[in-house]
Image (cartoon, rainbow, N blue to C red; front, side):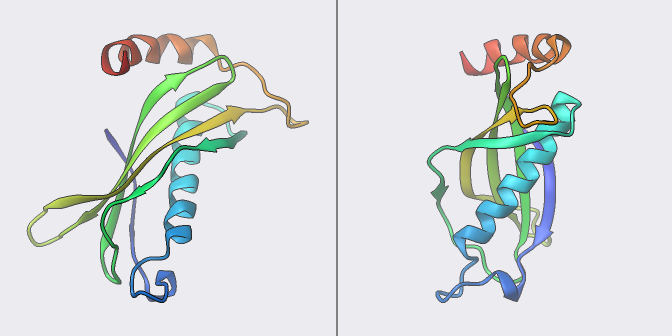
Length: 135
């Protein structure tokens, strides 16, 4: 998996249980994965189609360093699916723990918001990787 975002959990991200609010984490995932999908597709207009079941495995606390990792799971005709892992990172020990994971699918769109094909060179680049890793 490739590191796509690093940030810190701030007090403003905390819910009533002293953990990072799930909606804040989902927002961070969506933004990070969209930027990654745009980079992979080499195209700026990417919209979220679906976020699969999201598992919140461990709490994120104020001050935790958060690292988001992503990898291409599938490239369709107009869509791309990214596997996401969110990890906390201890800067002293460099130990990381997975706190959340999900798959998120984006669609490439034109100026009017209609789905358009992903370039064939992008599909070819990831086809062999996908077949080996996910099939």
